[in-house]
Image 1: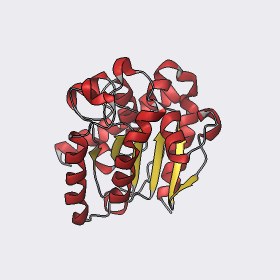
Image 2 (image 1 turned 90 degrees about the vertical axis):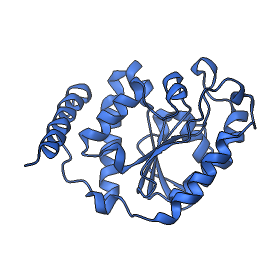
Image 3 (image 1 turned 180 degrees about the vertical axis):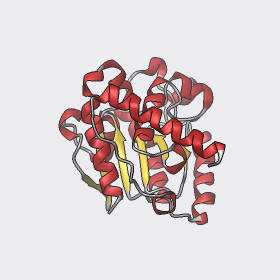
Length: 227
């Protein structure tokens, strides 16, 4: 066995154990879709997404551009079947220009790893591409200003499933404002793309008791992708 493969297996097992401890679960999902099944390569997506990224980097539709250090467009495999959409970049994301790189991002990675998924297999973005000052919640006006970019991003990637992380992502996609505790764990339609909302990883850092619920949501994601 190659050293890189062994390290990958060890890291994955660490993730399983960490999530088991944190989520209080007693089962593992080892047989998820293989890379070639989860990722359908389509090179025609690259140029449109690159052009969209350039447009977003020059955006001044709302006042958030005045404070940003970097636009956080999104990162991952553009040919994936699974798209994670969060709410807005935080401080560390604004500094690096990459989504979910702080503590919440580390937890999201652990959750994915525990299910046998890696970041390179999925795509991660946010409803807003610029950080709201002091990490405050996004306003309706800001979400509306950025929505065209998100819609175009989704249309280019064409995922099989979207996981909406947090209430603002769920509300923005589904156009309904029930509590995330009500919306989570169910499947909804977004222009013929299936959406499943769940709690935001940042929320789980503050409310670890709800990790078990997210674990149940993640199992539904894996089962859906197996279809």
